[in-house]
Amino acid sequence: MNGYKIYKIPAPGAEVEHVAEIDGELRLGEEGRGRSVTIVPVVGTGAAYRAKKTETGIVLVAVAEVEKAPAPCLAVINYTGGYDRGRRYQIEKIDGTLVTITSGQVAWGEAGRLGGGGIALCMVEPKTEFMLRSKYANHWYHWDGYQWRVETPPQRAARIALLEVKNGGGEWL
Image (cartoon, rainbow, N blue to C red; front, side, top):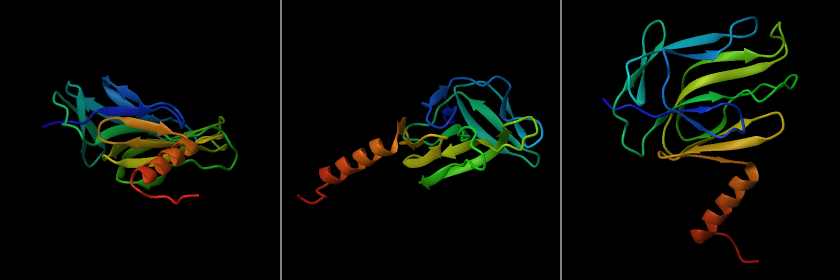
């Protein structure tokens, strides 16, 4: 059985990092009031991973062979954008297939009442894009089955406009 590469988006706006190896477990979220932690055990050795669901949770199984590209990937996505009273953060404007396998919650303040967000383990299919908000900016993430692309909204708009013109679209001014 072939597995998938795993990547990490440490915060909205951050570059995507390839995770070469997970040692023992993957922790999503925090413990405490207003928070929840999910522990995903990791078993086996290898450069790729598959998620397996049981009645009590999710287990990542490491395997030697990586699925041939273009392929889905696993992504640990921290979609918490920074403290901003009353703002809720989430993975937004999904175009394609992104499935949340499991997640945990983080929060600010000792009592956990100042808001927060989540960290999710997701399966991302090729040609999927989504947006993450931070307190000050938005960023688009695109998985093409080979690599990640991170863009600001103006960069994304310029890329889409150029693609439209290359395909014969647009109107002369």
